[in-house]
Length: 450
Image (tube, rainbow, N blue to C red):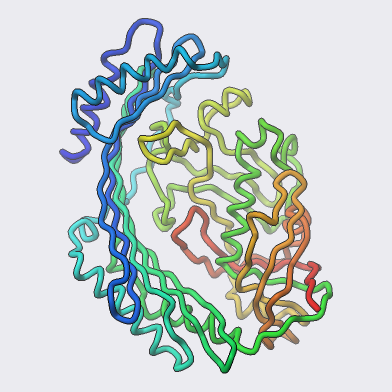
């Protein structure tokens, strides 16, 4: 444990040492820093370097919960926060399920989630990386110009202590670059994007990110509206990751309890193709959101949600687990010291296949590669599973990528889409989000166009 972590843990320990008889007490302490840089035409358009620290204190007494926080670690402010949290208990509504997480015997999976290289990486080098990404993207194709190029990093160190016996701290950092492109051909303009993620900037592949951004934009030039029909759909890894974000909300224990999930009461049932295995695995250090601890201080762990198409379970924090008469899966999430824990997936991944996207396409006689979707989150009903989303991409004819198409929709239900899965690609794409991408081949989906 570093000196910095020890300081945070000491603060958390000191708070819970003040617990009164009959009350449960939790102290969550954190220090965060972030950098955001945006470059346009070789000039810095936006720069933010911010640091924050603070403490959130939760008090539970007789089923009532009080919470308060402060954006400082000053001793007097902490004392005021504790007093305010205790006062807020009186305004809380009694809840029979209220309580803190308790140690569950699951060991922390130690990972290398902190990079000293990133921690010491100079700001001027971050700016130069961003400018280099922009230069590479412009050089990739004469029809390409830049919308913007970006660099982002974040570092977080936290500690939690509770009267129920949890005492843990950790730290992690990470970074990514992204570039948005515009491709022009006469009066037409198409957009593209590319990413590269890493625990430190040394892991970036700027050339790949630039080339992907240029390719995504230029290959849509000349796109037309396709005719409506049913066909095979290949989801690009980035699109798959977006769909997984929707699916994760239906596998959230809190949503299930509230009756807002299409998978309610379906554990043990076949809900997807046997080819589909979905895990939430924050213990995989390749995931951008990998972590050792959840938001309540329990060990993060690998949870299999769907195995061979069979629903295995949902993700829970300690509160939703009590309501569901089960145990926490280590999936408490919190947006820092300013809030109490919620429930969510930490790092979703579909078990990959073995073939590249090109190999997947080679076996399709009539299909479409969906490269981008729009309005997905607003176009999905998490209870019925119905969805309809705008899309653009490339037609597939006799195993070859063909004409670009846009302004069409793909529509189905999440249930049908998962059951109609034909193949999972091996092209895992680690993205700066809570889900990794991989190509998926879906049979017999409706494409609505002209």
